[in-house]
Length: 68
Image (cartoon, rainbow, N blue to C red; front, side, top):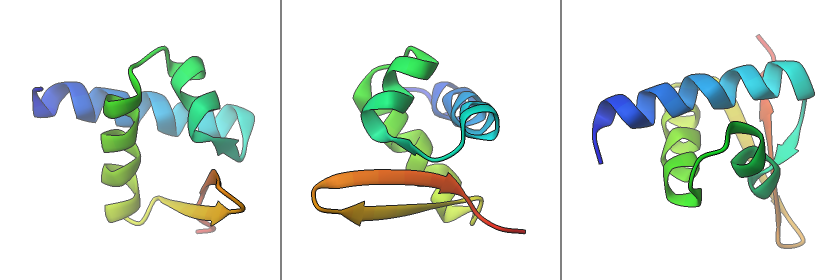
């Protein structure tokens, strides 16, 4: 997979979260219409940059924008 694809998906994830708020990984997959593996890499990218936070609660992953 190309880094460009992951970066583009990270942009889609960011915009989805801005529009829809906190979300599960499965909702992100559906919302950005991308495969789970690509969305997971995009989420990791954004988390590494400190732009989002990931909570793992009771087997449900919740992803949200970090407070600035």
